[in-house]
Image (cartoon, rainbow, N blue to C red; front, top):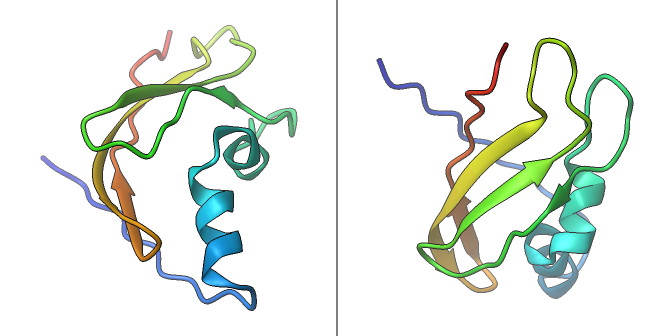
Length: 90
């Protein structure tokens, strides 16, 4: 079974600022947080098709704290698409 989640948002900012927020790893870390403790998730994201990256946070007794991803589409500054999966449940 394959699940797909698509999110469409409208922001009141310039497309350049939004693109930077979604593709700069230090800014992206502020968007992607650990839901249990609110801490930003370190990552090695790069907006390059084929780039494999990880979001990392403090592990818990039930999860290894890693989300794996791969960049699928980069059409700056209009579209970015990537996978997002976590398989480290304990």
